[in-house]
Amino acid sequence: MISLIWKCILCFNSFFENVSELDIKFDVLASFLTSGTLFIDASVTEGLIKLHKQYHKEFEDLIEFANQYYISNNWDPLCTVARRLNSEQMIEAMKYSYQEFLPLSKGNDSVKLPRGQLLFDVRCSNGQDS
Image (cartoon, rainbow, N blue to C red; front, side, top):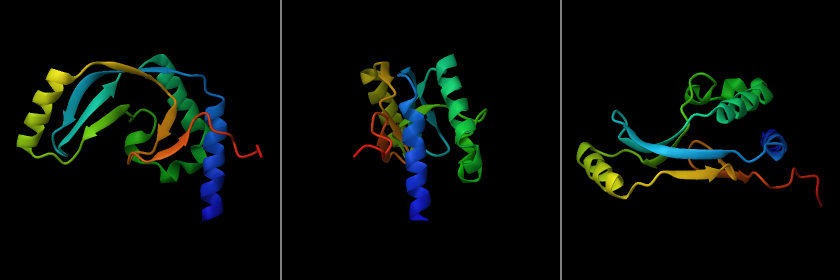
């Protein structure tokens, strides 16, 4: 199992080494009320869709491990701000966020797992350097 994990990490690194930087704009503040999640939503661009499709084509043999919310045609790129908020907390978080929120742009300099754990820096080596 460990060797499979390392193989996947090396494949991820190799894939992202060939990806040119993509500007991602987060300009929407929204929520999933059923889960109490507050998030900022990325503008969906042709470049982002192309990258996502290339990613899934490259790793199609791992589709059985994919979360249904992250597969092509069922994916909304977002960044979670807060989770598991009750209704009062959501209202306070929204009030605060609307007062403080500024749209931001970010290059794809890191890739994160859905639970927010940093998987690797996109610019890291593919493991062949010594």
